Every structure is written in C-alpha cells, then in structure tokens.
Length: 273
Image 1: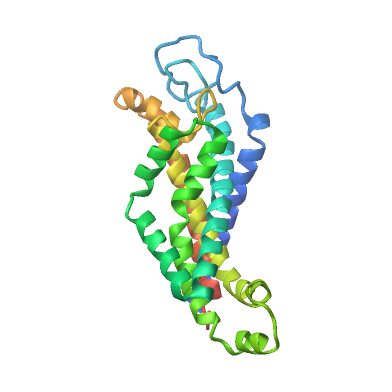
Image 2: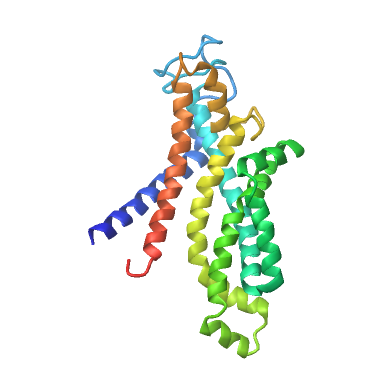
C-alpha cells in the first residue's frame, strides 16, 4: 500500500510540474519582465550576476536571462509536443501494420526500423537538419523522423499479442474488415501503452531539441531556446556559471516532469496496482 501511494504521489508531482511548465510556456510573454532579444542591462560584453532587477542575471549581450528562459519554455514545449505527435503517428502506424499484417510486411518494416536504429538519433538529426533549411517546422519533422523506432517496436509487440485474442478472432469471423479490426479493436487496447510512450517521447524530444540547439542547428535565432542559451554561455562557464546552470536546470525540470508522468501512468496501468 505504501509503495502504491509513493507511485501515485510521483504521478501527481509529475502532473503538477508539467502543469507549471505549461503555464510558464503559455504565459511566458506576459510573465517575462523584458524583451528576451533586446539588451536591457547597463553594461554589455560582461554578464551580470543574479539580483534585482534582473533576478537570474543577464548574459554577455545584456539580455535578461529570466525572460529568455520563459520564452525558451514556450519553444521547448511546443517542439516537444509537436515532435512527439509526429513520432507517435509514424511509430504507431508502422507498428500496427507490422504487427497485424505479419509476414513479408512485418519483415520489411522491421528491417527498415533496424536500419534506422543503427544510426545514433542525434547524428541522424544533425544530418537531416544540415540538408533541410533550419526552421521550427524542420525541427518538428526531423525529431519525429529520428524518434519513431522505439514506438514502432513496442506497438508491434502489443499488436502481435492482440491479433490472436478471442475478440479479434471473433470480429474477423463476423466479417469485419482489417481496417475496422485495427481501429476498433486493436488500437483501443494499445492506447494505454501509447499514452505512457507519449509522455516518455515528449521528454526525449525536448532533450533532443536542446541538443540540436546546443550544436547551433536547432530553432534559428533570435528565438531563445534552452539549448542555445547553454551553448552561448559555454564561453563564460568559469566567470558566469549561472548562465549555463539556469537553462540546464530548465531542461532537467522538463525532462523529469514528463518522466515522472510516464512512470506514474505505467505503474497505475500494471495489473494489481
């Protein structure tokens, strides 16, 4: 009973953290005290430490760190959720097709998935962004294209089990076509697993977006992003460590929030919990 309360508590903590992140993202323009792209400090070319009126300090260009963090939350959450949606759609379609059809279709789709898994996700994303014109929409598509493989494999495994269940066999015996069976019988039973994967995928896409921005090929400037803030602050990590610490903690916070949600949902869905 104590273990169950602990897991339920972690889910609630994750939901509260996620809700605060959503509020910060959507209310960022109203909460930000300054323009995130304009210099507001009296001194330039030298970061200012945290303190009034700049509570998280300013960077080397005199921009307010707090304002940039709030605007960066909006970008990171948007990228994380949209890229997650792209990831889930691609992975679910491929996993359902492979698991339900089996045979040659399964072999072709899974070998293609294995080929994608052979490439490190970040390296493949860098290559795709280098080919395409950098933009917010490019990041959505690229992260989705390199992140769907895990979703496809999990959905395929679930579908392989479900397609032999009595309710699926009964629907097939009653003359239901394959599309109806997949949509009405297989997909609803895979949905609880998809919700957990979606939460985990969101944390992964936020982390991948931060990595791309750190490498300078994420969402293009002047839009502030957490990864780019870390990259820009790397030259000042000795004299102004707060410039790296605050966006780094923001990425950690977002990833932890969605991981706690996924963990709590997974435990709640286990039999006997």
